[in-house]
Image (cartoon, rainbow, N blue to C red):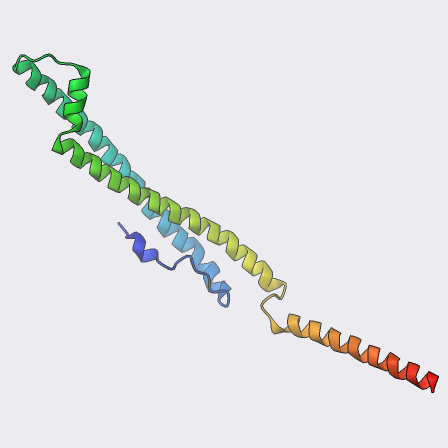
Length: 161
């Protein structure tokens, strides 16, 4: 299984290389989705192991209590089973698998969100947001307005003299 650390930095977007970012997006999302599916499978297997261990240990606890002639209550069986090392170990493995699964789910969700951000960045690129000409266009217009204003002032000065 892939390590989630293999994807450090994968959410960053190079806005100067959008074509490559768009090409990489689906393949990386597929890798993350496959790793997430594997993490879900491992979590579910660990959960089944916890249930199997619980059933096995609780059954053994009942047999032990009966063999010693002690009263068997559900609470005694439950508390004894939950306190065994075998059950605690299976529970710890399950919790680790669940955490790993949740981390992969978060990365998958973030990577899906990344696709929306890529779409927005492409829209900005198409509108000229990243080009110098959009800025220069504004300064050219400002220069023309300044020229027209100066021209009008000179014309009005000529008429008054």
